[in-house]
Image 1 (cartoon, rainbow, N blue to C red):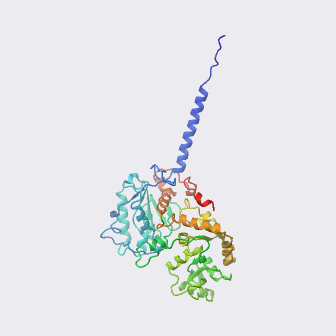
Image 2 (cartoon, rainbow, N blue to C red):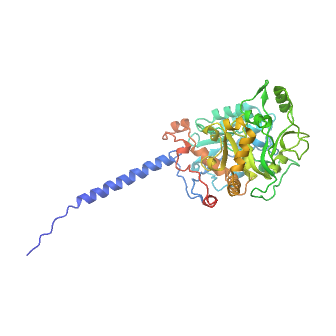
Image 3 (cartoon, rainbow, N blue to C red):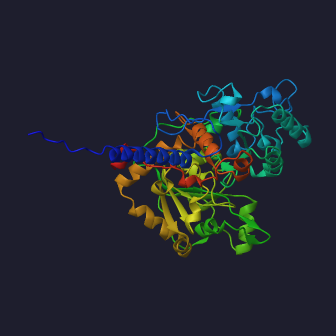
Amino acid sequence: MQIKRKRTNRRVPLISIFLIGCIIFFSSTLLGLIVFSRTSPTTIDEGSSDDLPVIKFYLYPLELFPSFWGPEAKCDFSKVKERKHDGFIFALEAMKRHPWRTAHPEESMIAFVPISPDLMARGGCPGLREDAMLEELRNAIHKSSIFPKKRHVFIAHDWKAYSIATKVHASLKPASIWAKMEERQDCMTSIPYSTNYGTYMSMRNPNEWHLPNPAKLGSDRVYSVHMVASQGVRNFKIRPGFEDRVALFTSDGGSMKDSFIVTPYGTHVLRLEKLLEYELRRCKDVTDTDRCVSQDGFPSRIDTQVAQEKSNFTLALRGDSLGSDRWVQGMTAGTALIHVIEDEKAYDWLPFPCTIPWKDILLSIQQDEYRKDPVGSVQKVVSSVSEKRLLQLQKLSFYYSADIDWAAYHSRVLENFLRESYFVPCKLFSAVNNYPSDIPLHQQNWCAPRIPDEYESF
């Protein structure tokens, strides 16, 4: 008997395979657009050791800016003008021989403009007029083959430089990315405050240097909580943002055992005392550091850092803005950080949120609780931290200090700065270059800060 084979319809599986292939193709294409539909059609190299994007950059030749560089330059970069806002020179030093730097503008993903509004604002460029500086800038980008096709980033961190920087920002539009002090918004990013270690080991401050001792971890340090700060009073009123500092020094919370909490004597103290109509307690000597007014120029900036290295915690209170350099100085000294927060906006200013998991490494006190009892609320947080947890926080401060300190061993600041400058939303740049709409930084796939596995086990 001849058996008839049943004819199999092979068109169905072929169609299914075709449809599945289409779905995979379009899904991967869409995902690629979501992740990297940023500011440049340049292919992103993800071959870095930490699996984060590699950002090829072009550094404009210094000779294009003769007012800043060269034999006829009017600017002097050899000395530190403002310790907290000295990031420009560190960035340039890091860029010189960095492997991400390219000599070919068209191969770059972003360009860096080597001018410093910060130095100009602090008197470091005597005789240099703003219009002359801006003319040099316009000439440089007019001859450029990549303007405005590539983002052009410049640093103006010092609040005193904002007037000059606003004009630079306008001259570089639509490709301008302004690296500021604490702001992160459309076409603007931020870099960290300069650390004392960066400043005093740069050899640009004659006879002012500080070499830290190897870190001592755990609670067996000299001081418990560290906080050194001026007071803010203007027109017989406490300046907005300084209320927490004033509350700490004027509350009746009793002694803060083993603390280093002082406010140096100066006109700011006299103004506050006039407003309060009584005198704040004067420190007896350099060994008395329990919420008092220090005298005779103590502590200097170096004294402050040395004391921080001997402290378990840094109480990082804000001033005119949400942040200050206390966060970065405290991390480089290996302390656990405590900050006072009113709401979630207190985290917005912190640098490089795509790299540093700030909420995991900061201890927080709600502002209303702090205002009721500054001393008690701080002591409550300190007493709640176990030895094991303190050791973890100290080690995390040291680990992430490489992300915010230009002078740290194997510093990662430049890489963080370049990535954020490349990925931060900039509507005008995207519109001019016909790129898709910008995605908020925290929603981008590469922006996923996490604690390394070796620190999770604590």
